[in-house]
Length: 203
Image (cartoon, rainbow, N blue to C red; front, side):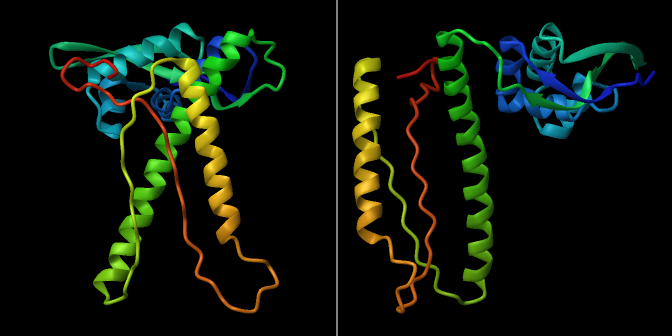
């Protein structure tokens, strides 16, 4: 039932690149080096099978996974999927339209946000272990909301936001040759739309 798959596949189609820049879809594809059903992938990731099935169909449509068979599980027939390659490499020459490039950047930012959140979680757990051992762990967090009317205002906010952060960072950056030791601190900043949990849309 297992089919031969490529060691790597160079992604040159914008549609395929968009699919892989979705963190969940990329995770699903990475787990399909061997055939598996939506239910198996869902259990491994901790997601609902219906959601995984939806993303599997999108990956199949993009030509990144394929159906390789079925199997009977009690009274159900499960479809088995397998990735077309073990790894995927984004080509530098995708030849995408400006609108597609913008969407890719947006998706890339969201992917980075997910990865950053996971890193913060792992770092926080490690610091909590040190705190349990009696070490003093100084930290700080900041959370706030703002209302931005349109794309132009969002762009202006991000530009000014980045400029202020660069100014603040420059103020506290220590010269490499400074004799006085300084403790390094990790600083992470993010901007994203708040989700309205009641309706599923953005505020």
